[in-house]
Image (tube, rainbow, N blue to C red):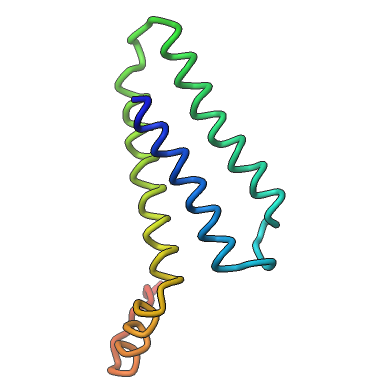
Length: 108
């Protein structure tokens, strides 16, 4: 589970960097506030893990594993989304599909 938490920590930092590359000074929330938010998020994940690991109780093992795996999936999907938004090749593909009349927006 430590490796998964290291993966989550790395993904959060990668997302921070990708968001800064994408938005620059127009980041919302601003970069300094975002660094604090992301650091606290990483700290919470590690604190919960350390508490669980040191308690010796296996009562909530399945629930914690579900949260960790779900978080990995969420942060990985967010990273892929940001890469697609930054990558000019993906942007050109989107423009091409729109020019052919394919609507890629959700109908809400």
